[in-house]
Each structure stands twice: as C-alpha cells, then as structure tokens.
Image (cartoon, rainbow, N blue to C red; front, side, top):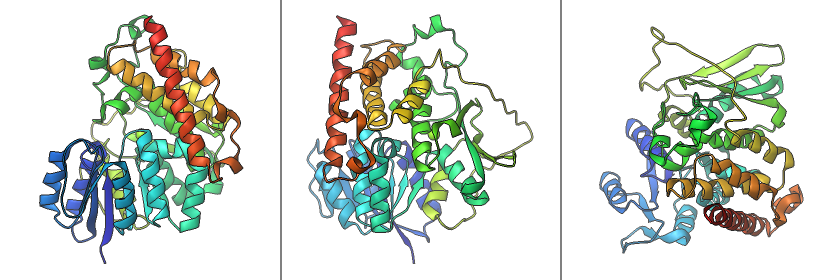
Length: 387
Ligand code: MG
C-alpha cells in the first residue's frame, strides 16, 4: 500500500526537494495534500501533476475557489485534519509552522519535521501530543536526521555527546569590523546550501545553528552541555555522535536535502537512494571551533535552553523580527544578536513556564502570547535603534 503524504510548504525549498522524492518513489507514495503560502501558480502546477491531492493556499491573498481546495490558515489546519495523511512533511518557514505541526500530530499522522520552530517553541506539547495520538516525530533538518539515524544505529544510551556541524556561513572568516558592513544581498549568498531567505540569514549569523542546538536538546533529551557545535565549511559531515567508549560516528553525504527527506518519508524503512552519491576522490574535510564573540546568536541559544520556559520561543520570535528588519535594510547585520539579547533580557510573562504549564489547555495561548510580545519588543527596539 502506498504511503499517503502531505507536503506543507510544497513550493518552497524543502517542498521542492520533497517533490523529487515523491517523483522517484511513485510506487511508494500517494500525495494527498500540498500547501503553499503565496505561490498560487506553483500550487496549481502541482495539481496538474498530482490531480488527486488537495490544495491549500494558506495566505488566502488571491481568489482561490476549487474543489478540494482550502484557503487561509484555518483552511490549512482543516485540510491537515481531513486529508488522511500517514505522514505530514512540514516545510513551512518559521513560527507559522507550529500549529500545522500540532494539527498533524492530532490527526495521528507521523510528522516529518523540517520546521525547527515547532520543537523550539513547544517541544513538551509536541511530544505529549505525539504520544497521545501514536504519531512519530521524524527530524528532517540534515543535522538532526543524521543524529537521529546515528542514535538509532548505536543506541541512545551509549551516546555521550552530540557533535552538531555548521557550515559557518559566508562570513566565517570576516573580521568583526567587516561584519558591520554586510548588506542583505551578501548575506543571501550561502556557500553550500541553497535555501529560503530567512534560513540563509540565520546560517550567516549562526542563529540557525542556535535553533538547531535548542532543537537537538529537546528532540534527543540531552543537556546543552552534551551538544557541541563544530564549524565544518564543506557541509559533508552532517553531524556526529561521540559514544561513551570514545568512538565518534559521523554521517556523510553531499549537501542535498533530498537525503534527509528520503529518510524521513520512508521511515522506519531504510530504502536505497541513488541521488548524487558522495565521491571521496577529491574530498577535503575541515573542522574548526565557532567564534562566539563574532557570532553571539550561538551562545544566546545555549542560554535560552539553560533558562528553559519560553526563552527558546522568545529567542526565535525576536530573531525572526530582527532578520526581517535586516532584509528590509532597517538594521545592520550585527544588530540582529543585539535585538535578540535585548528581548530575552526584557520583561515577558513566560519566563518560568513549567513543564506542567506546557501541557495545560492554555499552553498554546501562552506560547503565542509571548511570541507576540517578543515580536513587539523587537519591533520597538528596531525603532529605537533607528531613532
Ligand atoms: Mg540544518
């Protein structure tokens, strides 16, 4: 029987890679739902190729009236509930990915998660829902996919620490002085991965790695001290685990998101995958230590995990606003961590949100209220910086 698959963010970078896997696995997968936030033409093109799948146009900006079509955020949540997917791949960018993830878990579908904000903002809620509805959370982020597979192969109880690799972004070797001059266009040129604008800027500031540290701590239930970030410019080693016996195991492939997506969509099966295999003939691998002083988004993420409560959610919200401000030319590249630090140190109500609060009826409201508040604080600080 074919696996029924829903792809959220189908016209984005993750979605496009996922479609390749669906095309290669025609006999294995039945697409039942595609969503796109803004790309209506892309969505309609998909419906020509896969006419049976429901379509969601989640921004609802243009007229969209068709059979098996859904509109807006409410339409997206309803479509996830009704589509009968066995697995939902969430490739939505940023905080808007949270509620669709929760909807997928509530529908009893497995969640192939490329939206790290789901875990960063609400991990206790996510895992409680997964357990209640018998769904699995399968990471798609390349680092977490690597660690997930390595821990499965070697046994979680044998792991001492997780070694998370980071490309270091395009400004890894720049001086502190030069970092002040970076404009959006330079920051949008990522050396190894081809991704959407938000995650590309996050790679340049190391906020993406910060979010991944938070994600790894929650996904694999380890302390922040058990997670080390290692700069690895080639992005070929996707991550490593050090076992208690001292041995380090790594997962390698070309930097191509189709590998982790293939793994997640077939999980728990391991199927052969013939896309673009790694060639060792001319391979050079380098590793170095991240520079916390030049890239403060990384230590701020460690602080967010250590503080707990909604610190990770607030870190994420403030960063989203700061990145947006940078892309619009309102602030400098080096202002991004300043804004996030300012917001984290400011007053908001969810600082001490306990595990029990996370599981209460009001949990999602708490999270979204603090998310909103953090965004407002960040917006105001941007105005202050400009004033
Ligand atoms: Mg990643």
